[in-house]
Every structure is written in C-alpha cells, then in structure tokens.
Amino acid sequence: MEASAEMNRLRWRCTHRALLEMDLLLGGFLEKHFSSLTPEQAAAFVILAEMEDLELWPLITGKRECADSLQAEVVAMLRNVRIK
Image 1 (tube, rainbow, N blue to C red):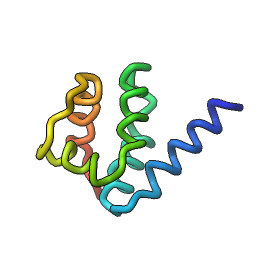
Image 2 (cartoon, rainbow, N blue to C red):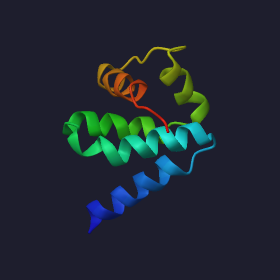
Image 3 (cartoon, rainbow, N blue to C red):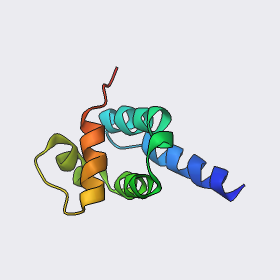
Image 4 (cartoon, one colour):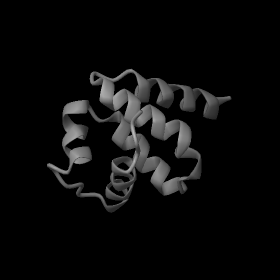
C-alpha cells in the first residue's frame, strides 16, 4: 500500500508542475520509462522530480550540468523523451 501511495505522490508531482512542458516531460517519462529504470536511477528521478522547475529546467535544456552522475544519466534520458 505504501509503495502505491508513494507512486501516486510521484505521479502528482510529475504532472502538476509550474511549466506545462515539465508536466508533459516528467509525466510522460514516468508513465513510459520509470518502470525500466534501475533502483538507483529511479531514486535519482525522484530527486529530480522534487526540484522546482526553475532549478530543473536548466538541467534539462543543458544550460547547467548535473553534479551527481546518476542524476546526469536520468537527465540524459529525459532529454531524449519526445513531447507530443
């Protein structure tokens, strides 16, 4: 039950962002790719999803680099997601 509640919280966090682009990007990634991440990558994604858009957007767009290598891996995956 707790895992489901955590997933619901993460889903809400990914789809209720300040920027519509981030809703689409994070929400789409969560639905399509999250289940195939390693536990370490999944934890890095959760940390990224908890960031504010103004902090995360520069990482996604490449204007700022990730200091954490696992987060950088996940950001690279996010950059390859197609938003419809």
